[in-house]
Amino acid sequence: MIVAYEGSAYHGWQRQAVGIDTVQLRIELAGTKVMGHRVILHGAGRTDAGVHASGQVANFHTPNFAIPLKGMRRAINSRLPNDIAIVSAADVNDGFQASRSAIGKTYRYRIWRAPIRPVMQAGQVWHYWRPLDAEPMIQAAARIVGTHDFRGFTTSAETRLNTTRTIFRCEVADMGSELLVTVQGDGFLYNMVRNIVGTLTEIGRGRWKPNHIDKIIATRDRDIAGPTAPPDGLSLVCVHYKNEGMKV
Image (cartoon, rainbow, N blue to C red; front, side):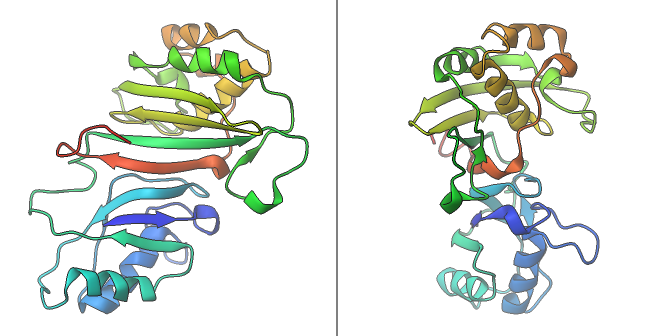
């Protein structure tokens, strides 16, 4: 299933302790009612509290083949809150697992650079009221592309020993009041995209030059990178699989 959600009201994607509201929990509860057995979802990524998605992917196993896919999707959607939707559903082979089968992901971050807060887009963008120069951010983003050790762009909560990842695309698009940061890679560390965005904004406001990115990568030092950008502007746009490559 491809899943879209506005994450402001949830404590992230992943099911947590009893009483904590998450996107996974909501879909599992709705799916269980529809399918007639307990539904356990396997998601492609664990988005944090407040992070959104237009292309999250999740799968579950079922012995119930009596419900057509279209009807199943409609029935689950009818039991979901208005800020979560199953966009599409398809049968997959038994070896498919949303996370392990993925070859990459694309994230997009929205920055609103204007003095007045964007009231109609509250919760969807990071309101950055100070001036930001897009050109050095564009130059800095290009330096992130490639295979690097991204330890300097994660947090102390990251427990994985291997912090090397390949970034295929890191671009900043100047849309006037809004800047769009698109990052596509074969995998991401904890808070990696938000830390990249926070570093790019420090470069955009003139604190560092674009080549400061090289120093962060070389030293693997989180202390010399920028702050963690808030979750509001981040969205999981697409999860990529072998049969469709790495296109957005």
